[in-house]
Amino acid sequence: MTARPSRPPASGNVPTTGACGPTLNRRGSDVTVEHVPSRTQELATELKQVIRLAGRDPEALEGRLPALSALFGVTAAGPLDESARVHFVLRRLIPGYLQRLPAGRDCGAIRELLTWEDADGDWRSLTTRYHHASAHLVNAADDFGRRQEPRLLLECARRFLALDHDDRLDAGAPVTAAATAPPQMLSDDPGLSPLAPLLWTKAEQDHKRRLTAIHGGIFSVSNQEEVLELLLTITDVARHSLHAVDQTDLERWFGNARLQYYLDAQLERSRADGIRVERLRFIRRGQLEDPRQRSLLREFIRLHDAAEATLLLCPEEAAHELRTGFDSRMFMVLVDIDACPACLTGWLGEEGYMERSLVYLRELDPVRTYYADMLRVKEHVRRNHCNESVRELLVSHHDPPLAESSRATHPAWSSLAPPGHAARSAAAAGGLSGHG
Image 1 (cartoon, helix red, strand yellow):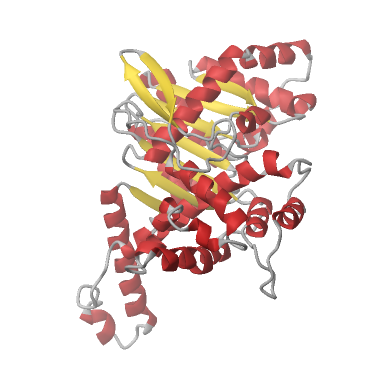
Image 2 (image 1 turned 135 degrees about the vertical axis):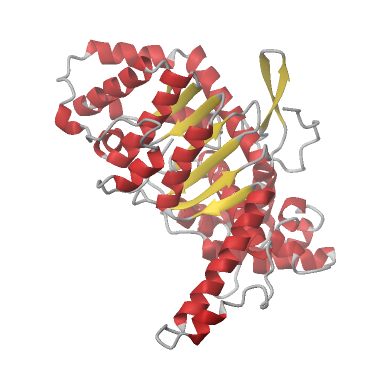
C-alpha cells in the first residue's frame, strides 16, 4: 500500500485531537500512522464553517467549500460561479441531504445544527442550535461545542458522503429505453399483469447499475439479508487477514442462529485456514457490572481463544477520546488489507436494524482510514492493558456458567454447508444489529 503525500490542512480545521485522518506507511514489518485530512474530516471542517457563517455572512464562505463543492449534487448542477455555488450548497444541497437523513438522535441533532434559519427566515444563533440539538441526545455534555459538535459534524460528513455515493451510483449507469425494453412475450401474454413489463425494466436497470458500481469498486446495500450474505461471502474469500469492528449485543451473538453462523465462519477461518482474524469489540459502560453479561463475555473470549483469533476489548469511551470513525452504531468487516482489500461498513438505526451499508472493493480513502483507526485503538488497548484488565475483572467474579439454553443451536459450518446456504436455511429471526 502506498501512502498518500502529506498536504496542508484546510483552513479552519476542527480544533480537536484527531482532526486529521490517518494514512499508513509501511517499511518492512513496521507500520507507522501519519495524519492527513481524509474526505470525511475535510467535509467536517467545512461544515464547521457553514454552521457559523451560513446564516449571517454566506459570502465569507466563497472559496472555502471545496469538499462540499465536489459532491455530485453540486457538480451535476453545471458551471456555477463561486457565489452561485455557495448559494446552491447552502440552499439546495444541504437542505436536500438533511431531508434524506434517517430518524434518530444524532441525525435530529445534526438537523438542528444545520438549520441556521427559523420558519420566518430569521437567523438562529449557534447557542440556540446547541440547545435544541442537545435535546435530541441522551446525557449530552454541558460543553456541547467541545464535546458533541466535533462528533456530530464527523457523523454528518460520513452520512453526506454516503448520500453522495448513492447519487453517483444512481447516475452512473444511464440506460436507454431500447436497451431496457421488456421481452415481447411479456407484453403479448394476455394473462400477465401490465405490472410485469414495468418490473422487468426496473430489475434490468437496477442490475446494470449494480454491475457498473461493482466495476467502480463501491456499491451500496439496503437489504439486510443481502448484507448478511455479503458478510459471509467476504469471510469466505479472505486470503490473509480479516479485521472486524463489533458492537453487537452479546445476547444476539448467542441467541440468533444467523449471527452464530457468521461468527462460526470467521473463527473457523482462523482455526482451520490460518487466516489472521482480529475483532475489535467495544465494552459499554456498566456492561461488566451485570453477571449475565460477564458470563456471555467469558464465553465470547473462550471461543476466540480456542480459534486462536485476536479479540481486542476496548472501553467504548476510548473511541470518542481517540476521535475514530467508529460510532456506537457502526459495524465493519475488512479483509486482506495488505493485498486487494474488500470492506463492508454499515450503520444501524435505533431499533437495531440496518439503515445503510457500503461495500468497498478497492483500497479507497475510507478503507485506509478505518484500518488506521483500528490500529490506533489496538495500540490504545495494548498501552493501557485493556484486555488484561477485563480478563482480570472476569476472573474476580464467580458468576454461574453460561447455560446451554442461552445459545442458538445449529450445525457446524463447513465447506459442505456454505454459510450463505446455512444462513438462508436458519429459522431464527432477528435484525443485523451491529455485525463485526
